Every structure is written in C-alpha cells, then in structure tokens.
Amino acid sequence: MGISVPSFFKERKFPFIFTLSLLLVCFTVLLFTNTNTPDPHFFYSDVQTSSPAQPIVIASPLPAQASNPITAPPIQNGPVWDETSIPVSVNFNWRLCTGSVAVDYIPCLDNFQAIKALKSRRHMEHRERYCPQPSPRCLEPLPKGYKVPVPWPESRDMIWYDNVPHPKLVEYKKDQNWVKISDDYLIFPGGGTQFKEGVNHYTDFIEKTLPVIEWGRHVRVVLDVGCGVASFGGYLLDRNVITMSFAPKDEHEAQIQFALERGIPATLSVIGTQRLTFPDNAYDLIHCARCRVHWDADGGKPLLELNRILRPGGFFIWSATPVYRDDERDKLVWKSMVALTRSMCWDVVAKTVDSTGIGLVIYRKPISFVRYFKRKENKPPICGPKDRKNSSWYVPLSTCVTLPPRSSWPLPWPNRLTSKPPSLATNPEAEEMFYKDTIHWSALVSDAYLNNAAINWSSVRNVMDMNAGYGGFAAALTDQLLWVMNVVPVHVPDTLSVIFDRGLIGIYHDWCESLNTYPRTYDLLHSSFLFENLSQRCDMIDVVVEMDRILRPGGYLVVQDTMEMINKMRPILHSLHWSTALHKDQFLFGKKGFWRPGRGSSKS
Image 1 (cartoon, rainbow, N blue to C red):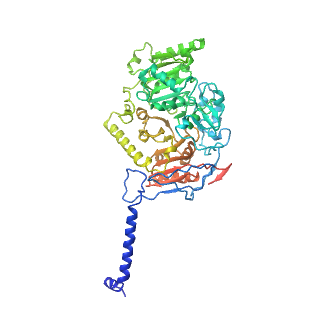
Image 2: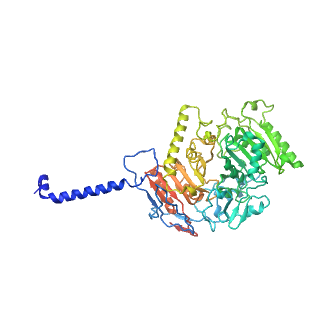
Image 3: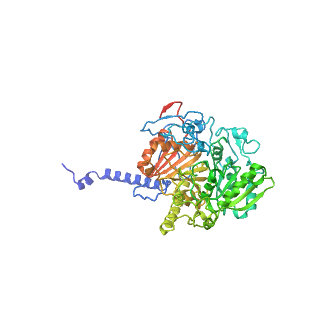
C-alpha cells in the first residue's frame, strides 16, 4: 500500500530531521572550503562556458629515463606537473636515428642522397634544402652527458661542452677569440675575425661613425650574414637590438648550434640559388663581417637579394678586406662592389678604419623609388609584377631590383611594437583587427601563460611561435628574458612584414617539412589554431616528431586548438613519454622529458 507524503513526515519525523541536518552541515563545510580554494583556472579564453572549468589532468605515461630529469618548481596560483600514468591507446614503434650525424640530424639539410646527385655546387646548392620523402620518423639520440642548458644571461658567455661537443671551430679559430674550451664549458669571449677589441668596441665604433644608426631606437631589427658564433647579435641584445644571425651548415662546424645553445636568435640559411625566407623590406640593417659571400657573383644576385629584404632607408655594413686593403685581389673586388652598388642606387654614407686597423663601409638603400627611373641604364632591371610578389618559399633568386614601397620608417623602438605597422593594409578593418589582436594577446599572455601556467619561465629562453599571425604572442613577451622566432606558415595569409615592422623577427616555413635548425634548440613551442588546416596537408605524426626534434629536454609545448586536433596529438605525445595537461577543451600543455628509445625499435 502506498504511503502519502504527510504519513511519511508523521511516521519518520526524527530520522528525516537528522538526515536533513547532516546534509546542511556538509553543504556548509563544502561552501567554506570553496571560498578558501585557489582558482583552478590557469588559462584565459575568449570562449566563455556556463559549466565550471574541468580539472586539469596531467600525465607522464612512463618515467623519463635521464640522469638529470628536470622538475619544474611549484608555480604560485598554478598547477604542478603530476606524474600519474595514463595508458597510451595508440602503439608507436619509435627508433633512434642512425648514422654519423644522428645526434644533430637536420632532415632537409642532411639529405646526402639528394646532395650527392646534384649536378652543380657552384652556387652553394649543396647547402640548400632537400627534404626526404617520406619524412623520417626516427628520434635523434641525446649527446653523451647532455645536461640542462646553462640559463640566460650566463649562457651568452658559456655553455656545456657536452651539449654541443664540437671542437673543430675552437681549433680553426683559436687565434681569433671566437670560442675556447675551459674545463666542462665552451667559453665565448666576444671576439671574432673583425672584433679584435671585442664586440662592444666594434658596435660603438659603428654608431660613432654614423650616429643616425642609433642602436635600439632607430635600428631595431638586424640581419647578421655569416654570423660565426653570433657574438655580434648576442651583444647587441644589451642595446635593445634583435638580430637574426644566420649561416649555412658548413665546414665552420656547429656555429649556429653554438648560437642557439647560447640563447641567441639564429637560423641555418645560405644565399645560394633561392630567396631567403624573409619578406621584402624587412630589416633595418644588414651586417657582414668577413662573411665570405661573393656579392657580385652571378650578375649580383646575392646583393640584389639583400636589397630585396632591406628596408628603404636601411643600412648595409660591410667589414671586409676589400674595404681597407690595397692588394690586387682586394682592389678588384672593391671595384666590382662600387659598380654594383651604384647600379642599385645605394649610397656610401661612411667608409672608415678604426684603431685596430679594421675598416668598414656603410651603404644606405634609397627611400624613394624615383631614383631607379633616373638611372642612365635600366641595369639591373626593375622587377616586374611577377617578381614583386612578397613570397620567398622555394623561389629562385632574381637579377632585378625590387622597388621600395611607399611606406614610412617605423616609429622608434619601443613605440613601433604597438603602433600601426607601415605595411598593414590601409583599410580601417585591418587596423581595427590589428589592435584587437594586440589587446587579445596582451591579456592572454599576462593573465594565463605568465601568471598561472605550469611553466618554469626562468628556464625558457628560446621560444618559437609556430603560427605567429601579427606577432601578438611575441609582443606580449617583450619584457621577459627571452626571444621569439615568429613563424608564418606558407599556407596562411602573409603577415610577416607586419611582424618585422613591429620590431620582431621571423621566418616563413611549411610545417609539413623539417625546420632549418639543429635538434634541441628551443625551450618552448607555441601554436594557436595551426593544426586544423595543416592536418589536411600532412600527417600529424610527422609534425609532432619535428616538434620533438627541435624542443630541448625539459622544454614546453603550448597548443590552443580544437579538441579534435588535441585528441589526435595527445596520444602521440604520450608515446614519446611527454607529460601533458588538458584544460577547458581548448588548451594542451606538453612537457618533453629525457626519454629516448633503446637501440633499434622500442614499442611505447
């Protein structure tokens, strides 16, 4: 027989009151506890949800196999990495790369089969990119004795020898003070072929010679061609100058690897038969100190390429023996250089020799395109509409002059970082989008990445934004002791000119291919909604393997993307023994350990 509600209260009065009282007490305790619990949110998002944030799940499928694993210290108001095991639902057979260059393997530059088949090496073809197909999925072994890198700023002057165990450059340049071995370290005294009294003396000499250069205010973005170990760019950082140091992977063993291990911006590249992966009119100043480039070769193509990427009104500093020596060979080179620079309408604004006997010449690119139409000869010719396209991914060098655009020099640093970039489209919608993007990244980085994320920022120096957009992520980090390589993928709208206008650096790249950098050269990789379109062009596994290659052990990954992409990426990271963290169905954290597979195959 059914019991009515009044009968229930009548017959079970005291038990009911006791139960109700107990529930109220529990609720009060929970409420009090919540008011004293730190906010679980550690990511800012424009996407607001009605449900509370999900708890963070952090995992490392297997313990990292390393003699010195990195443990991030507790971050105030943020989560701590947890070593709880999560099973891997997908099986991968990972193997170590083999061969003489396995530890420092760069797939697109170490494709020896393609290099051997080249018909010519006259124009440095053997230093250019030849990506293997299919992309290799082996993992680079760690150098014996590899350690956590020396932190910045100490790393500018000293790094662990075991991390980059290459003594050839030490012996080759022993009389020029580039790099020395001292106990367990490689020491960088700040010298070089042209820096007999150190880099600071040399950069002071440049600014005294031409005060309008005004390091760190008027001149902010510099390219150092044939950079050696990048001491020129490393010391200019003290003057608020960001320098892209570049050199090929050649007989000067590991010079770019030295630079990146030191925490100095650098990339592997060569002026050969193809354009450099930079936009037109990008750099405020280009520097070459005995960089061994024959500028007048092949109809002047190498110098014409510098003209393409140099900002109108920008400077080219050439410090080489033809500038200040009088032997026959140097005289011939200087004569050829005079003829070529005049044909390009470059002006000599300074030519001098310092107290050490080292000389330099400073050229300036014209601001106005009108001068090119006043030349007696149209030689080299003005580039046509096809050549003027701002594209430089697998594009051959040209023998024409790129006309300067009708745009002004950016505002002095640091105002140029947040002001309207000269190369931005003139319509109001573009300007509004730019400012909204700047505000968005400023809030996201300040409120989420820096303050609450489980990242030990004191260990982060080399950062890469894999899908940089307008460079807002990098702009929001300029007050930190780090630098950002902004990558604009070749399959998205081209915004790299805007990035350079802001006083930042970057490159073009196709993430379906390997990057021109050594393994273990970045501390943090960041991407925002890169993978949805990328996955339509290439396999996610290949992209993750490349990220594992270029990230240092103990380094971090921050991905903002759809859950579909995150769910594809996460098991691959787990199979590589990365720790991961998922938050708000939009953000994925990863942390690389020291794990490497055993010899041969190893199933995760």
